[in-house]
Image (cartoon, rainbow, N blue to C red; front, side, top):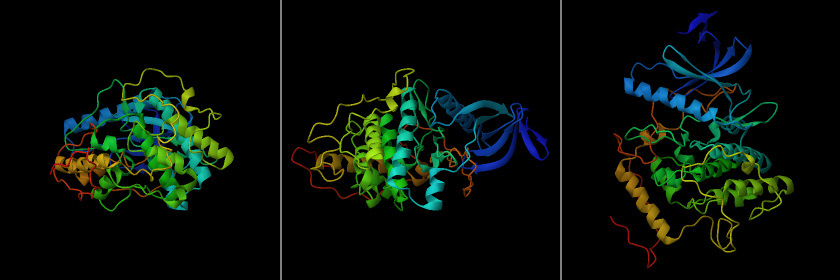
Length: 411
């Protein structure tokens, strides 16, 4: 059980909690001191909630341990480091490295969007982090500005908050009527439950790059229905600030995951922009990526797509003759039916938005941020939403007339 020393709690007889760095719906992150080694660390705690049932409390604990296991498999300069996992008073705590600095979300809120060179730098770092995670069989599933830390003094980019990560070979925590993730940064195939793979994290990176360059996700809307429509079927209109990196963003935000720009090609294009100031329409062969240099520890069994060859002229994410990400009539009709099906399944704003990670952004940094009101825990679920208590039906999108070969939508 934790003890008090100079009005500061000590857990596991070793870690003295000193200052709260961030708080979300399901966790609190503290600045702490490791009294054994005499170093500063960050400690992620799941506070006791007497309103939870025994099963809910157990799922919360399992989620914390799963996050620690996911991070323990990874070793990369752009992924947060886990030092220890301890239990105190029957609650688990994750002990991590302390990042002196705020999140990318803090940076955007305080100083506005970054320029294209900085966005490319952040993108290259995150592609390296995702490449290491995917090679180890770990999908992040919640890549967004809140979960990217920027270290003060070094400008090191650190990916954190693997709270809803999916690990190959481990069971997924589920509960009917809930969806874990951040809708504005969630890939359409994962939103529908069709599949989840490394490509879904890359879609999230495309949305994050838009947010870094313009200040908000391209799928930001005033309602959940609007977000669903924008992600699944709406025309994607990139802000003008994305211009220098448009070929990369366009490739990452390809709705068909099999045609989406892969990590290796995306990194080569960003490196070319960093060195020349121009983003090529296709990846130049001279730029060797770092994502492929991470040893693969085990096969990734989570709907892995092998890196595709360079796009053939007239096809692929770099094709110039098509409007930006405008889908064929058949695909639009299918996506429209998908939105209606999700509405019929009862996807509610509470179910989706309650799953936006821990809300603390994995806040192992020293940046302070507004503290959201604590909400009940939302355990992990499969990517297919079920029926929550209060469904909210998105407005049915307008669709283009179907081609002769496309099936007519069924009411």
